[in-house]
Image (cartoon, rainbow, N blue to C red; front, side, top):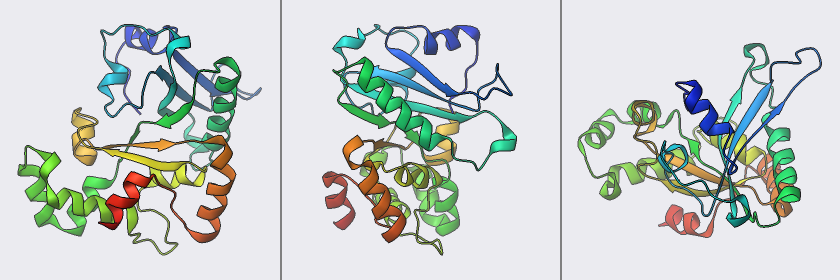
Length: 232
């Protein structure tokens, strides 16, 4: 999801005590994972990917953290695309981290919104062009309106969310926790979604209930803050 440009960057994602990587393997392919997830142990829910991936940072004692952040979930085998191992992997990781660290109380993602800008331009090129020209997205009413439509008004025949990442996490039983402007300032992040990123929250006691309400009623589960925002 987030490009690794060197062996040094790879070590920075795997080696520090406040970083974890979990993967599913199969006996037929012993040396290659089917899917992996990168995890950052942090003191709060991050809103920007640079806070997770910054090159120079102070390593945190895992015992002093309270939040596990899933920031990159990558399917490694082209032939298995469309098969959702991620569902089982994330739930397994949550359980494993709870056993290892009793201090971890929150399990969230920091997720991209890969199709939003393309959707917005197809929906209304004029508003999308206006957003391109606005240097302060925090005050952009056009962007706010389009975000509401994108996440809360499905245009699909099955009435599931427009966003594929939302369908994945909400289908797993997560809730939509927070939408973050200026979350990803990389060229790819800007091109995909004007830099917007999303936190999805995994609460173990609610996963089954959320999953059932999503699958059976197309009910979106989201935080109280977003409920107010969506209805305003």
